[in-house]
Image (cartoon, rainbow, N blue to C red; front, side, top):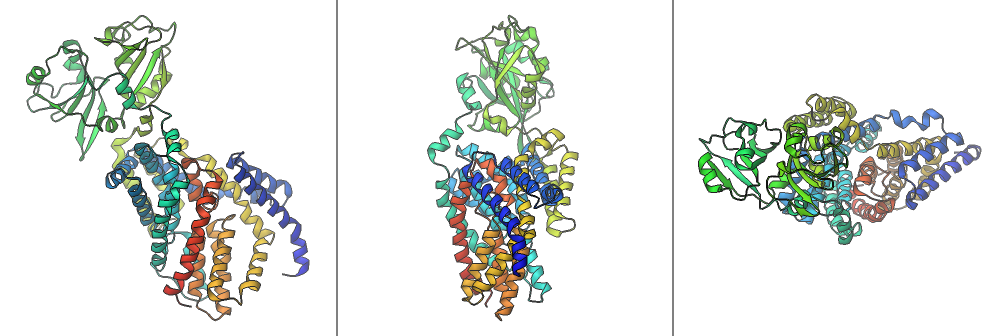
Length: 618
């Protein structure tokens, strides 16, 4: 590059560096939202004239941005159908409630699946799974979200198709007739890094959240268990199995007249379907009882002879397990409501209000002046200040807020996050995801089209609706990615990348082999802070191969170093979409990624630099 050209590029390049340093400073300071900083960066490029308006907003037309948005919808489909919770329960069961085992199994699962499909897609799918696990184990998401993103990035080091940089580097090898990688050429290095990552995160997770922080973050919301204890429901709610010959079989809850005849109220029906239990709220009264059903009944009549009642109707009392209410909470919820002053409910009973018929909910507890009322609650005239505990389907509880001017819903318990409004469509969701994975692995269509097909299938099968789909997209994460993409164009347009490359050739061209690999790794790591890992591979791979050829060495270790280093984007939340996606879900700050990512990047560099020549000799 001659002096005249260098002088010509100097002022625009200085402006780009100023914008870059300013953005990093604001990220670290953490006083402005990260997406706001990204928008300010876009504004800076527009006003400086370095980039045109089309170049600044090019990210909005990038297929990868659309892909990330679609994968958020895919993840929502897994949540709404309960698949995410099934996976979390499997992990929890396998780990036996051990955080260490959960972390190990999580990272191994994500890295294994990510070896054959998009790491971004895998992380999007596992984010809700991790959130559920954190809720169940009462720990901060900070302790598992970072291992999730790290495993997603490491998965890119496992196979040839695991990530775009691998394909870019392989294509450059073939273009220059310097060789080619096989499908599993990356696997030995990837496995070593994965083992290193697991052990590293077992230690480093302690730097992200303390036990005290876990407690502060997880006790802010009350749970259904709290409501059950507060209203003394454990002593009142019983579980009965419907035996063969019962006169309940074939009748709806309403036709049984249990409330008027016995003072009993069927709250939910548990029924096995397709080898798993499903729970149905019985508050509408239209549900038909079948043989082998398990009825959860609220017994408000303390004088009822349960043994005689069971003999008369061929029922068998079943034990209530500790997790019954947790399992039920996926479809049946509870909440507290109170009559609105001067509303139509004041002075009237639930029977007079036709509460169950109109709202589809059951009143199972009333508190007045802090004391629990006993007896037949549905006949009790309501007063302003009463607290009513109601049970029913989550969607009916949510509709209560908009459907009435007589009651005010105080708040939802934490289990509303487990609500599974489309549980019956779980197999359709799995099928849709399987189609997406198959299309991504085979490469029949681009990844973004595969994700779009999956989203349309999820909509067709009613796994998601339009409202939940749009609400599931993390718009702030998308804006952050789009806002930082202009740096890639600006660094290339102003000659910044060329200057770095020239410096590399002049500085390390005559140094030892391992030092050359270290310099290539460091170049990829630094460049990858500001541009995508794919762009990093595109820029650095030709330089690495050219350097190897000039030094009369095999290009394979040089190319592998670029591929591994391009995936080692651990240091900032903007260096990879995988990191950006867990940023909000984990409640991280910019400095958290630096604190965890910088030491691990150095470890990965040292391990790979010394291992690569073993598998790919110079």
